[in-house]
Image (tube, rainbow, N blue to C red; front, side):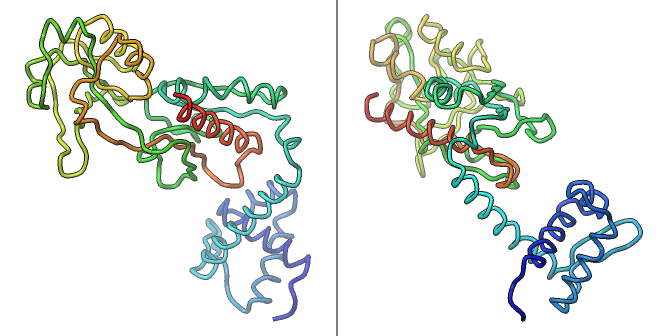
Length: 306
């Protein structure tokens, strides 16, 4: 095959756009070209490769098996190029623009609150919009650039980057509650207690997971109080209303000052950490990558200093 040329790069970019849109018309609008020009580019590329890359009918366009493989490899290459250009531009590339994030309340409290001062100082002209909600969200359909969720709940078709290591879930109660109701010494004894139940974003009541590996047990526990946010659960536990099941990181200050005590410490359970995710590597705003690094740095400081 002859050496790679600039015209080949243009034709490959055209091919990738057509596959992305599954349409000559959509690709033509994106690239500001005519559909005729796109057709010529594909014919040149197919002639150069001596292979058919697209199956075209009057109603649809779909890549052949070879075309699909080529499109996937091109996507990786264009992602690398885009990342290199962003890196070369440095933080100036992140100075403007807007990022819209959708995050659960625990992530907002543990990750964004500590990171925002540094981010605002470094990128004062970047508009950052944060929607805090615990319900499952289709970030693409609802117009968000990225979301934060527990890593094991991120949709498989999304690009994800870890923000934290795995996190521990613990049971806690106030000294007053334990003095009144007694301290359980094994998971089965929780059925005799008032447990502050956790409602998930889809309105299902979460079964507590205690222990790890072969010791893991899942319990649907009794309780008259059910909450869908951690802050309210912690407040109820501090007031002596029952035993709560929460992320250990959310109650470190309460454990340190004695407002809460760990219940069943040997039955803490390890769950997935937080990850940030978005639809495509090519949509990764430069400021978003900087925010990721700021969040990670803030988490490291938290781990060191408590």
